[in-house]
Image 1: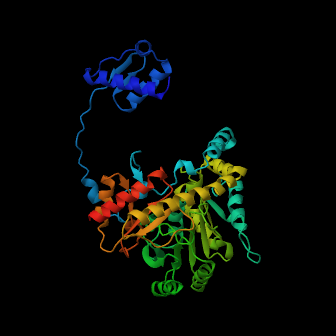
Image 2 (image 1 turned 60 degrees about the horizontal axis):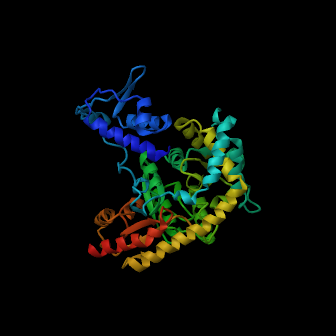
Image 3 (image 1 turned 90 degrees about the vertical axis):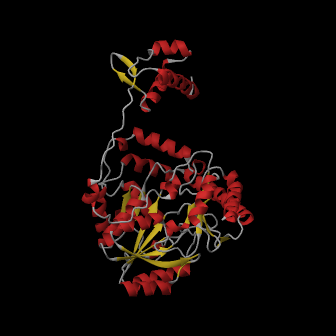
Amino acid sequence: MNDDSSARIADGLREWIRTAAPGARLPSTRELVADYHASPVTVQRAMRTLTGQGLIETRPGVGTFVRAARTARPVDYGWQTAALRTPQARLNGVPTALRTTPNDVIALHSGYPDRELLPARLVRTALSRAARAEAALTRSPATGLPELQGWFAAELGETTPVGVTAPAASEVVVLPGSQSGLSSVFRALVAPGQTLLLESPTYWGALQAARQSGVRVVPVPSGPEGPDPVRLTRAFEETGARVFYAQPHYANPTGAQWSPALGTEILDVVRAHDAFLVEDDWAHDFGITTTVTPLASHDDAGHVIYLRSLTKSVSPALRVAAVIARGPARERILVDRLSESMYVSSLLQAAALDVVTQPGWRTHLRNLRHQLQARRDLLADAVREHVPGADIERLPSGGLNLWVRLPDGTDLPRLVLDCERAGLLIAAGTEWFPAEPAAPYVRLNYSGPNPSAFPEGARILGRALEAL
């Protein structure tokens, strides 16, 4: 019997429970097997569903009974208001990019690729192998599995030019996702109350990590081509900052990719101020028409703190990333990681390493380029056709998002709400600005599910915009 049979049995029992008295005894498994002409396994699956919903309870050796309804008693948590005091950082709730949605909604808001863009077979095989190996039962070293450290170092070393010292495996710290790495980097390099420079707009997770770390955030304007080195210089000089966070490749949300010349200029500015550049290479595997060469490849003096994530490209279930840092900065970051999480699951590290070292990984990345390009172009064409006044300032050469400017004066909160009521989820650009937004923007993700619905999503957005 399949899951549909289990659901049918659960529905029938749910109806029976609705009219039964609290404490009434349910028929035995044997009786239900006979009544529904089902297997014991299917009946047990239905019973687990009802137990999980709180409708029934099992008393070992006695039977299964209708669970009595429990009346919720209101509890006063007002005392916590005084105990907690004012929060250190502004509480914004769950970011739009992390919202889960029903299947009948057109989802252009997400920050994660759809499962059809993931190397599903490689991931499942890797997890199965890791579960049978020692990694399932042993603790990882604090800095990560040596083999995975070596892989991250070797990957960056592939783009390191002659004359620059390539990173060593010992300079890699494996992380449970790059978000936790950002928090550690900010805490380790910027004292509470000191200044952190960030591109504006920039990744909402970096803003959240900075605010939780208690640092002072100062935005540096960044356009479709990246930040202006002159403005960055001025920001360093006026604030005394020593850390600049940026996404030089396929920036989230703008899609900007710095040119090699701009990257050199930015590095020169950072070096001139004895500062750090935190390079977040979140979209390393999502190139479409270009390929990433990290700025960290050109620095061996410890100015660049390099973050490399596998979470989005391998699987959201395998939250594995790394930070590559040199000198005392690495030691400070490692100390923070030890206090935060001690180590990363050996099982997840082994599975991630298995995936990226299989021949099929390179094949997957080549196919992914074509899939992302088709999706990007489909969504961009739909926006141009159906959304009057919308401007895609840059067609990204990689990444997952379109950054769309809407007409000045657009009521973004109302637009987002109207679109959601019509069955379309989009992300308002305000979430990516450290301060007031420069203009009304929305971020549209082209890696989400059901790309055939992109044209209809653009039509909904266009109608909602015209109705404002």
